Length: 218
Image (tube, rainbow, N blue to C red; front, side, top):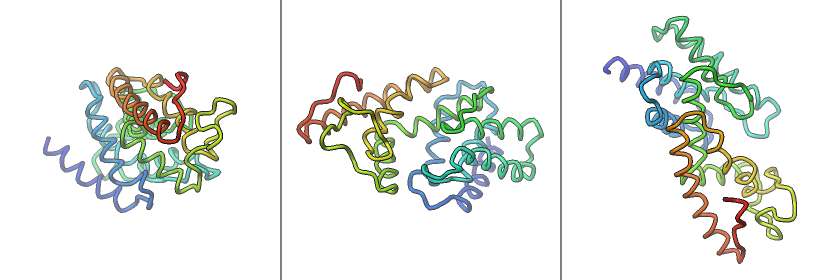
């Protein structure tokens, strides 16, 4: 455990020195992903690989609207590969960490093929749900200069969702569907709990703007 603690301190410092100024993908995000990963892991993952993937998966963080966004996880994996040999990682552990990082990305669309990759993907997506997920969603939308919602049709009842214009539409397109896409048992349980909190928030939100949350959003 002392060895893992030392590795944690080192990798956290490496990430802190390289993280972009993005409040939705900052060092606190990495801490939460690592915490989520530990909650999900049933003891079958390599803890060193899982720790490294948690702290190095966003070394290259491109804005949501960047044309190379789908390549960010691959770029992060390449940087991680150059760091891990000095941490005493074996070639197999480096490859496992690389794959977990590449496969965690929603936009990359690469299937996770290992235990560590499945855990990391679920752990990262959990951070888009619950109270933190609410805060991050509006933070990102604000950074991209997107409106909170469409005042004429806030819950997309008579139009197609468009999260390039409205923050709330992103919930419909992606966030509320995340629990169904979890790959681990622990991830699914936590995701459903966090989704329930988000739906409660949406009901209050709807009431305050004089609307009602459609049942289709549940």
